[in-house]
Length: 374
Length: 74
Image 1: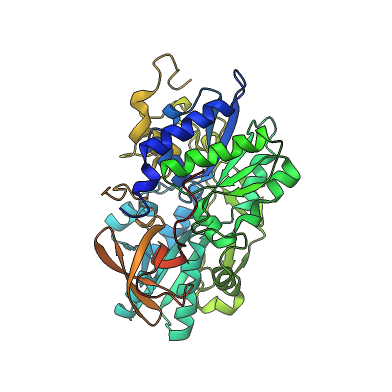
Image 2: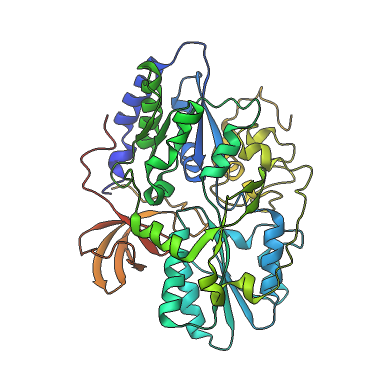
């Protein structure tokens, strides 16, 4: 398949693996964080860790949009879904994320009208089909997904759709990266930057990482050859004494991002003062809400949101997984009390979550001597 | 031919995928992904034309994909 086959070439992958092996410093571990959950998924799916020398350790980051949503926001969405006359629409994974009162799927089983959609545009179309109900789109996601919500809001305004609203939980990538970079004792030497977020925000958005924190970045696409090439780029930077943002995903990503997408986000949304992240706590300026000009489509203006705050289950170590401090299998409930069928933590819900990805592809290859639930 | 990843992220069942434009009708385009056709919004890539390759996510096109002359090869 065009644009896929060439990026899964075993010959190219072997060549890059050999180059990487030649660039490491024997015995010196170099920790590379892949920020994006899509990268985590690809790394496990294609077994890329097996191609890397032991000196390169991959650390999974916070970039799964489902995984970072705190349980309380799910309860808030359930409360909205249970409002009379409301149909709540959201992406498939969000229906399975457990809140303190169960999941949206369970709320649906209790009688709430919860629908799965592929796009916020589908939710807007649903509103046209259900004129007697208010369709609320439960919006989550980083800057990759925010443009779809923004475009939908602009269309809702242009069409003067009165029975559509958005419960906005969009988050931004820079603040959690700063939070991770400032985690005491965190050992991350380099970053694989998210590809699709960068399509929107551009590669310049990461310049603070080399300039303020002294770590190189390679913005990467998602196929195995892409990821290996990004790791090689990062190691080459070290070998050549450079520390900068490089762009491996040149076929899509530009330095400045997509100006139209950024303008659509900026027209419809503004930064919240703060937002609670799973595993990272409350981070100032890290999420977006609708601008007052869109109040008539803002679920937070139309309804009373409970604002539920719930502690994560004590046994769940999603927070440490999300910040790269532990591997999924080091959590005591991984694969036992917490499985994709019955997830305890969000990292096990989304297929982009590190725990779900490791459960699906990696657990059978884990060396026997490594502890389970240590 | 390689199959497109069968395990797309089900966050939106549409983790940014590369799709070819078949037809454009105003702000909507019909695109072909892995042999199937679907509709996406082209509000952010307004000059999309049949034959273009687009990166699509959550029902909209995020960007046009440039001709592959760089990227995978070092």
